[in-house]
Length: 261
Image 1 (cartoon, helix red, strand yellow):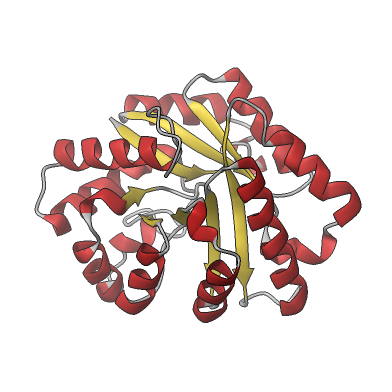
Image 2 (image 1 turned 135 degrees about the vertical axis):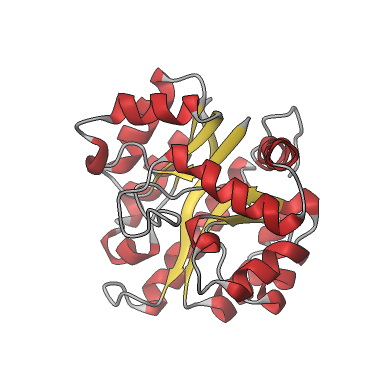
């Protein structure tokens, strides 16, 4: 059975066929999902989806692109209150995004730190969004002692040095559709070297569809294509790889009875 550890099934892009998308994922062998809410609109829809589906869990946080929209006195207590929800397993996605220039870096840094502190108070793992910000991500995680809760480097991108820094801070590395792209040689090299107990897979649906669906709407059923490619890279059968990454997902999000990541 497969675990899609990062998806956005509440997205408007699934408005017309959401139930069919979820059903296709289950038919493809996906037994668990973590759906991610990242702003005022998607946190409520994420929670609603998790409440309606036993196999869907929730992560809630504030996306770095929209850091400038955060109203600290209102939004931080609101997010923190949801961390007590029984289906919320992580704080995320949070982090830094230097590709888009909507939110100044200083604002992103401040919101990122606040989100880490919320996670530490709630004792929840964190889900990291990183785009073109490797050095600052590592620095802030270290300064905020994020290794105390650990978490996931969502849709991992970067070389082995960055991977090692993340692994040393108690993080799992999660790989999605890009690992199947023809030009992803370095990413596949990293995937081949990750310790087996720190490896996760995801879709980030409706984004980042794997080959041969690149550029089209992604959906959770396609995590199977990610798993097939990753299993090939690791020299494992699909069944072995699915079992491994599902066990890792359960451990990461503390769904296996553990109290620490």
